[in-house]
Length: 100
Image (cartoon, rainbow, N blue to C red; front, side, top):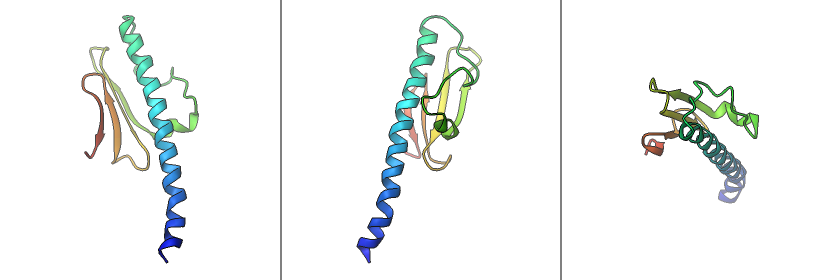
């Protein structure tokens, strides 16, 4: 009964934890590259075409990426399972999670 259900659920949860770990690391690298550009006085790209993902399969989990009109502030939203539950970064407010 419960053991069988646990054995079925655990691999999925482990896979999601692995994806979250890899996404968090990738998004931290992406944010660092954008902040470095801003610190150097260079424009922040309006899309992610210039960014080389270490694992291109992670790109599909980026829900949105926006650069504000001032060209210095940006936000990034990504998800692990579905877009309604997102992890985000804003250059104004930092990292956050929705719905939290």
